[in-house]
Picture 1 (spheres, rainbow, N blue to C red):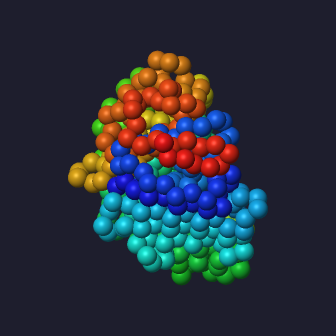
Picture 2 (picture 1 turned 180 degrees about the vertical axis):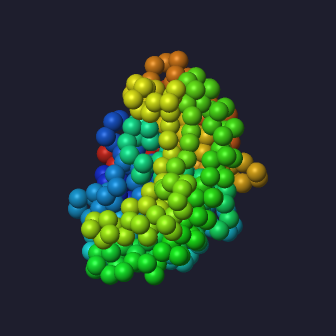
Picture 3 (picture 1 turned 90 degrees about the horizontal axis):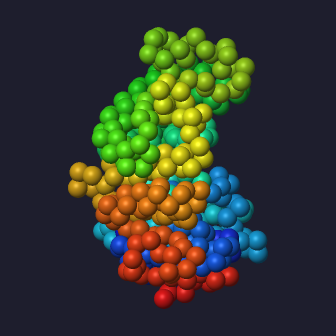
Length: 351
């Protein structure tokens, strides 16, 4: 799917803008601090309902504004329009095809978008939350029914946790938590298996290190989740939250049995993070599915020329829409773009 039009108001330093984008290569130029990355953030919000730079959406609102609004028009007849807004008082609101979204997960299904930015190393270096979002985004696109099970699981988990905080018996919620948790774990495991050939191909091109991917479902194999939840009720009551389940899953990256973050340099971690993003984007765009829009921000940051060239070569192989930033048009890495924009002091001009 491609984003054809974008409207933004009240987001960081960006002035009120309206843009027409091309389904293929879009170049965004401008000085550091001009607002190039903020423009990528606006596009990312339409497909994720969150920023790739901060988990606090309120920080995205311009200092002199009370809210931010992003609207997009796509080339998909099923999801022709997307909207995301955040108000300091009323919170967030997302819309898909003219109706309110029940969950931000609907944005991920409606508009697949991936980003490779200077912070992509966090997929490797930081805790499991980043890798959870990475994997579930892929599962959303290859497993029918996953989104509804994911939403139901989150609601059931919230109810069990509420009982725990009140000091009430959490057991009434456990059978449904077990049923839904097993569905989610199975879907994630199948997606990991489907990802493997894309992962091996991309990893070989970018890093050349034998990094293994493994999936931890959020609880041990023996005993089962039902028994684990029953045995951990007292401990869960003490901390007021559920310690085991499908919400605790992780994707583990290892080199010769050691955690990849302990072995690799920051530049290598960026390449590994980029391999994760690109491999998942390829899986999401396989089997006649629409390829995701790829956002590429400052691709040469912390990489030498050889590895930058390898990263760009892999991106060139991907079909679909690309939005890439550069300081100057002469630094564009993909030849003459199909559409170009210049950002200066938050104002975006179509070239």
